Length: 452
Image (cartoon, rainbow, N blue to C red; front, top):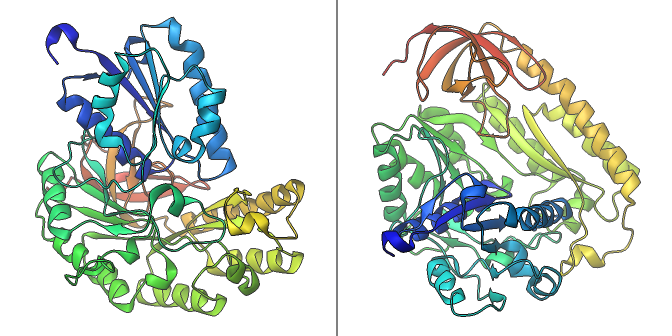
C-alpha cells in the first residue's frame, strides 16, 4: 500500500486481555501492510470491533458497541465497519441478517487474513463474512502492535480450551487447547522487554495446562523459570490458573522466584460439590480448600483473586450459603462474580432447575457486599508495609497525584495505588509505604527511589 492509498484504521477491543492480544495481532498485520492506526474513530476510514460473546452481558456490550459505531459511522470519514472475534464466530447467520450496517464479519480463525479481506471488499458492495475453523494461534513471527502502556504487556501462551466446563462456549469458539512452543514465547518476551516492558502478564484460558499438549517436556513452571532469566524483566504475573493444575512445584516457584508477583488468579466458580460436579469442574470442595490453605501457609503475603458464578442451574439456598461462607473463610484479596448466563449449545443450558434472574441478582449483591467488606479489611492490614509499585501516570482526579499498581494488583481489574508523596517517572517501579486504603485502592508515599 503506497502513501496515496494509505487508510486509517481504529480498533475497539472488548472482553478479556486474551481478546486484546488478538486485536493487537490484527493491528500488527494491518500496520505491516501500510495502514495507519488511530485511536480517534472520527479520523478512521476503517473501524474494527473485536467482540466477546462469553456471557449474555458480554454479547450485549458487543452489540451495543457495534450499533453505536454504526450510528456514528457517517459522522466521520469511516466507510468500512468490521466486526471480528467470538461474536461472529458464534452467531454469523444472525448477525449478517440483523446487522446490515456491518461490512465484514471475521471469525477467530481468520485474523491473519484481515488485510487481504479488506482488499477483497473493494471489489464488491456486498456484506462479507469469513468464519472458518478457529485453529489460528499467533506466534513470535506474527506482527503485533502493542496497545498497552510501554511498561506492561500480556503474553498469551496458549489458545483454545479443553476443560469443557458445562456452562462455557469457549471450546467451540476457540478450539481445543494449543500451547505455543516455549522458544517462541521467550523470543517474544525478550522483544517486549527490549522495547521497555517491565511487567509481563502470562495469560491463556488455563495457564496451568501449558505444555501438556507438547512433546518436549514444556510446562508452566519451566516457562516461568526461563522468563525470569530475562535480565530487565521485573514482574511476572500469573492470570487464569485453574485450581487442579496448581502444583507444589508452582507454589514453590511463586514463593522463591523474586520476579514472580506474589499474586495468583484462580477461577474457582463455586465451592459446593454438587454444583462443581454439574459444572464439570475437576476440583472438589476439599481440594479447593486445601489449595487455598497451602498457598496461604507457603506464601503468607500472597494476593489471591478468584471468580465465582451464582445462580447456576440447581443452585439451592444451601449451595449458595456454602459459597457465601467460603468467601468469608477464604479471605480473597480480589473477587469477581458473574450471574450464570444460559448459553445455547452448552450442557448447562439444557439442565433443569434454572434459577430466576431475580434470585441471581440477589445472590450477586450478597457476595459483592461481603467481598467489599473483606477487601477493605485486607487492604487495611497493608498499612505501614512497604510495597513495590509500578508508576502508571497521574490520577484522573488531580494531576498533582501520581497513581500506579502494586505487585498485588493486576492491570485494569484490581484497583490502584495513589501516591501522595515522592517523585517518579511513568514506568518506574518504586518502594512505597502504604499509609491508607479504601475498599479496593491503596494510598502511600515513596520511601526510596527506583532501585534501577
